[in-house]
Amino acid sequence: MYEPERKRRQWSDGRKKRLRRTISWLAFGVVVLLVAGFAYVGFTYWHFASGIHRVGGVVGNSAPGTDQNILLIGNDERPANMTAQQYQQLSTTADGGSANTDTMILLHIPANGSSATLISFPRDSWVSIPGHGKGKLNAAYVYGMNGATGTADQKDAAGVKLLISTIQNLTDLKINHYVKVSLLSFYNIANALGPVTVCLNHAVDDPYSGANFPAGVQKLNATQALQFVRQRHGLPNGDLDRAARQQYFLSVEAQQILNAGTLLNPVKLNNVVGAISSSLEMDDKLNLISLATQLKGLKSGGIKSATVPLMPDPYGTENGQSVVLINYDALPDFLATVTGGKTAAQRVAAAKAADPASVTVDVLNGAGTARGSSTALATYKSLGFQTGQPADAPSSQQTTTIYFPKGDEGAAKAVAAALPGAAIAQSSDYKHVTVILGTDGLMPKGADSSGGSSSSQAPSSGSGTSGGSGASSTPAPSAPTKNYNKTTCIN
Image: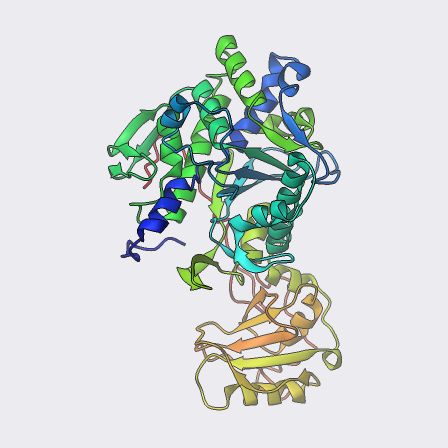
C-alpha cells in the first residue's frame, strides 16, 4: 500500500495555512483503554471513572464476551481555557482548530482478548457519507455535528453517530463503542506516561508539525510525541506514513505499560489514571471493567497494526480535492483476515450453488480480446443462466475475477463452477454477479467442454483457501498486519 517517494503538487499559501491548523496527531485510545483496564489493579472504579466525560445516544448495547470494535477518534479541538504556554508546548496556534476528525483508528478486540488490531483509515479517504453523498472521511463528523441542534453534547453525539455510520457502511463491521481524545488531552496523557522510545529511518525537520528529530533511536517527551504523530509533510508516503507512526506509537506505549513499568509504580500509575480520567470522552455503554476482563490475556506483543487497502496509486482528485482512494474490491477480504472472518472465496465455497436459471450474469471484457464478453455470455446462456449485454471493462485487468453483491454467494458459486481458476471478490459496484475477463485468458467452459465443466458443479470446499482448489486459484491472504516495538525503525 506504500509507494516510493514521488513529487507532489506545490502547496498554496492558503493551503499551507490550513495545514498548519490541521492536527492529525493520534487517537490515543488503545493505550488509554489498556491503562484504563489494568488501572483497576490498584484503584477503585469510581476513582478512575468519575472524571470521564460520557456521551449518550451514540451506540447501542453490545453483548459482553464478544468481539469488540472500538472507534478511536482524534481531532483538532482546543479547549477555550488553553494558555499561551500550552499552545507553545503543543506546537500549535490559538486559532480554535477544527472539528475534523483527522485520526480514525478502529480497534478490533476478539472475544478471547488475546490480541488487538489497530486498523487505520486515512483522513482523506474518499467514501460515501450517509445523506451527504461522496466526501472525505474526516468530514463526516462535521456534517453530523453541523446538522444537529441542541446542547454541545447532542451535537457531538450526532457527529460521532454519522462518522460511525460511515465507517460501518464502509467496512460492514458493527462499531460497539468509541473513544475521543482532543489535542490537549493527548498531550496530558503522553506527559503522564513519560518518555517513549522510538526509532526513525531518517532525520526529519518539518515546520508544520514542529517535528525535528535525528535518525535512529531516541526518547520523546510529550511535546515531541505530539509532533512525531502529527507529521506528514516531508515523509515519503505522506498520510500513510503518518498512520504508520500512529500505529507504531500506540504499540510501543502499550508494550511499555504491559511490561509493568507503569503498573508497578504507584505514583506514576496515579498520575496516569488522573490524566486519562480527565481527558477522555466515550460513549455511555463502554464498561471498562468488562473490557479489562476481556483484555486480561493480552501480551506485550499482542497488538497488531494495519491500514485499509488502497489503490496502487492511492492519491487522486475528486471534486477539486486531493483524496486517498480505497481499494474497495480488496477491502472485504482484508477485513475478514484481520478480524478472523471468512473471505469472499471461502463464503462462496461454503454456499449452496443457486439454480443457473435464477442467476443473471454480466461479463465485462478487461482482456482487450475481440468479442471476449460476447463469447463468455454465450457460454453462460448455454448453461441456463440469464445474461446481460456484452461490454468492455473500464480498464484492463490481469486476473479474471467474479464479483458478487453482498449476500449472493450462492449465485457466485454457480457462476464460478463454469470458470475454474477465477478469483472471487465481493463488490457493491455491481447489481448482478459480474465476471471481468482478464489477460490471464480464462474463459467459462460449457457443458460439452473438455474436462466436463458444468454450471451445476460446485467449486470445491477448498476454494479460496491456501493450498485449496476450485473456483478461485487465489489463496486467502494472510492478515496484512504488522507488529511494532521500540527497536523497529520507521519513516
